[in-house]
View 1 (spheres, rainbow over the protein chains, first blue to last red):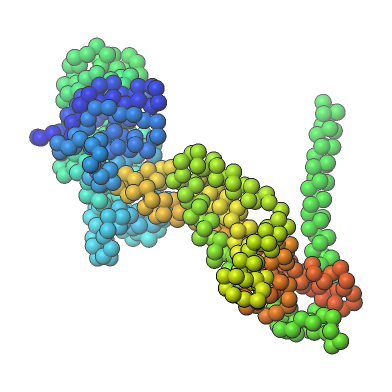
View 2 (view 1 turned 90 degrees about the horizontal axis):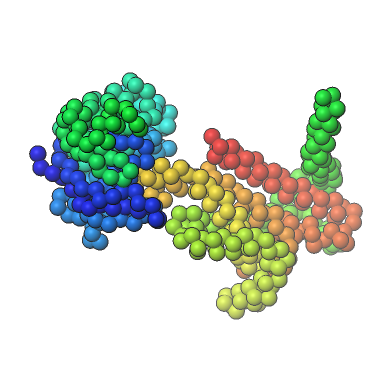
Length: 251
Length: 287
């Protein structure tokens, strides 16, 4: 498997507080990479540097590089909107737009210039199928998305992200607001999706990382402490701090 | 213990009485307007009163048709909305989403100040600056016209439209905007395709509030509209519902005075209708 994203000596400050310290990591394509660590360890912050969502916070300062297909995404020639189209994101709290299910999915393609009704219908159906929610919603595509359950809303958000045909899907604790059944459906979905997409998932749930990820990165106080194959990291951690965390001694 | 309860009850009653005072005022005004507005309408005839095109209250053969006033108020308000809403709306989007914090603080202060200027000052500036300018630019004998009134009203309704729209736009959850940006939409696309639709009830309420402001304004429009009871035309001197009451009340008597009350009643009905619409949108915003 080739690497699709690489971070080199990445540092990030919120005003004067340093939230990420010299992070170096390579993420292989068509696999699931999990970021774990206690609250405030920088895992979500690091995830958001991968599609430049941190740019939206005015006080953020970043040094170092994040390369996507060999291109530093913080280079001034990079079109950030194009970048975010290729690197999609699913948020912690399901956040469908207050519009119909159909319009939610069609929002991205429309933004990128697709107007043909036939084409949009096709994309909407395919995205909903890929997110394993088509059968549940096919009869109420015109209904407001806010009327769905939390788990359905989150799968809708995944479908919405897939509709712009990204290469990478960033998931920021996508199941933390969901019940166990909805959670396992999202996990199954993630495993299915890695055939075609690269998935990076932040999770506070170590079992989830074990269940679905190929590689795991453990963050602590803004540092990447340990990174490797999930199985190995959980069975034979190299660093004492990783061991303490995964055995539940803190966090 | 018992004493505490008594004090509680007493305070409760005081608040209740104060609240009822407001309700009482509204009720009193409504009843008074209906009682004093109905006689002239029955005497003149509903149709002749509402749809008569000639108002000549002091003529030997007086005529009491208020269609010129109704249409002037409707046209004047529509014109003010047509100009004021786009300006106010885009200003609100700019201030709530795009502006630099310093620029925003400065401009918000300016908008609040605009809201605090007394209407007679608007009228005065309109009279001294706008009216002569309209006369020059459009080459008409007198600049005091419906057009000048529309411009003044458009400026006067800006603060309400900007502030209410801004409140609605700022209440849009950030999660919606994040989701849109994460799909590769630009910030401006995001504001117009996600934030504005999400705030649409609030923005509609802002427009209705603007309508209420415009239709109820008297002093400023009286000073710039010329105040002649013509059927409305953009560059002619006109009289509004509000100014019709204000300009004759001091020397009126008999049927003329009663007719003025009837005009006030018509204006009151307009305002009630606008208020009902406003409440409808505000309620929708809450849901």
